[in-house]
Length: 513
Image 1 (cartoon, rainbow, N blue to C red):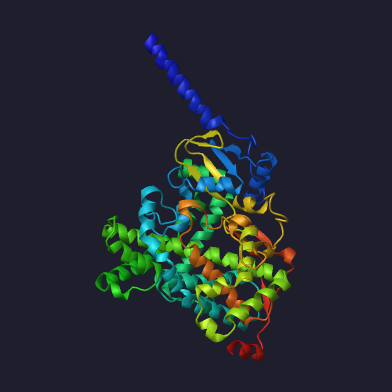
Image 2 (image 1 turned 90 degrees about the horizontal axis):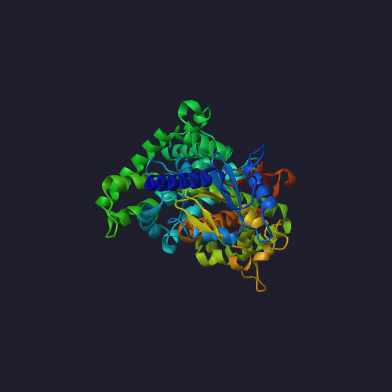
């Protein structure tokens, strides 16, 4: 009887403890009954954080649908969490359908643990400096096509869409080695498979992001309740409506490259797909079966298209907006661009050193990324019980990393709400490091930092430099106050349109000389 009583007491204590952790426990201050109203979820979360945090910006917690959420709003705390990926914290599984081309085969962006390590080793050589520099001619050619389109149109009412066309063309050739002409053919019906692929991936991305960002509670409803019970399941199914098209195209692309490169490796280009095929087929500690190799290559096509296209286009869009809103900075940045790469021979021999010399433009990009980061917030899940800031976070805790708040509400950054590129320049005009201003979290931090960071930075600079070389000036067609920051996974400007001043013959002749 004593033994039974002891076991019963222990079981009751264990059950009570778990019930407390599952349904009651809140390690930090926060709202007791969290409910999203109308408006941006990011704004709700940031408002709660400001309301309940203390002077040291401690985390804030709340519960929703039985799940514990912890909001983190400082750069140091966010970095501490990201440095513990993928061992302690992982990405929430609901993001996978937005990025991976092959269901059940996670790509580099969504893979976790050993699978991520294996893929990282396969793709890391693709992003080395030499390989990325080999992509510069592709970036230049497609950015020139974008400038031609803008010059032809004069007034561009939806600039973000055309920026996405350009980044899709670039990522098509840089990632897949396939030339795309999305900029020229966007308004026409086409049977070009690469354009169809880009359209399908964008459509799936938009549906998936609308669903995920509708609310955390909706994510949990679809996750835990059966199909017949959730009226929102139809929206969740939209994540996969294009998968047949995507899978057929990517399957064909990967099969062709595998056959070509296994027969003759010398035919490999600088593109990420070819470089990954070579790495997987070479001598390595990892062993890839033919089936698994094809699945991973296929899934990462979706990853690179989505992550490499949308994010760069948003950053360029915001930078153009701020430059048009600050004509003196537009004039200064353009003058430096013309002095460094204004001549055709300098532009034809574009290099990393020349891009690094565009210090004013780089400062503008850094400040735009700080004020309007590509990723406004980021969620990770605690994969095991962990200590954080002196508190226990049970396994399954959702941590919401408020990256926008961390870089835009910083008490040590003067006038943090203003676009001031000069804060990134030292007395000699050199670009300051993140540590000297505020750490930029756009590309993440820790082991899972974006491997394509260098490629994205080059792409953004090349696109902006191309437009500044071509056009003497450009002007917003909206009042700056009417351009709203729309929350999705990235914060994008809407509406965003420009009137581009056509270059004079004298200006073109000056560039040529």
